Image (cartoon, rainbow, N blue to C red; front, side, top):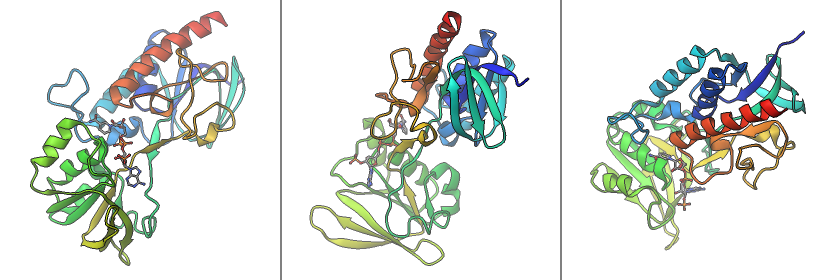
Length: 306
Ligand code: NAP
């Protein structure tokens, strides 16, 4: 007879790990399934400066490994697998992965999000050959070289500042007249001589045969096109949720973020969602961890009443 977990958590980012800590500590039988590595998007944060308790900041991978150790300490079962389908009903869900099928009374979706693409010419072909979506992963390949970061949010400005420590010049290309990132990051960018703001501009094509050689940009106000000679292009234009596998099952918004009640229960009884994959106002490590705590309380109550 296959074992039935009280809670199966899909995704081991900060939301999933936080919920695992709370639920396993409440003596529930908890399993976490993660397809890449525990930590989610937090893994690639160079230095997390706004997570309370670490006045000098903490590396994302370090925080993730501490959270994983804490979840395991309380008895969480960790599996490396990719979930393809959820079937069954509350009390006995059957969750099919690539490697095996899991059974659980309750499911928590904490699948996080993935990078958005620009969808411009040669972006796909040159990914890994100078085009990247993660400065902390690939920045070191561009020592003393010229790179561009595309985007105007917190991620783009953080990536540009990180790359300014490695590259010779960093073009920070944004489609509007002002960045949308926090004031603090904007001030840091303004004071960094290596970061060259390129505003009101969109990238239209990346050029290069086997590696990135040039970037074509277009000024959206004047229509004028220009070429920047560079070696690296970092795309930081936001994220989209990892929810495609449960699209037909749950109610979501037009972008695929999962709609939840205040208790973080989804439109299906016994399935909850937490962290970046749900509809929410703010997506931070701290809010994901808060979601994990909140949803574990809801799940605990749900299990007691069912
Ligand atoms: P974001 O805030 O959604 O910003 C995406 C940026 O990319 C925007 O400036 C947007 O332009 C631009 N963009 C979107 N599609 C584009 C396209 N096709 N072509 C050109 N530009 C495009 O995404 P994010 O910066 O990745 O941040 C995601 C979440 O993580 C946010 O909640 C953010 O606060 C959080 N975060 C926080 C920190 C921190 O607190 N230190 C660090 C990183 C991320 P428009 O401005 O014109 O829309």
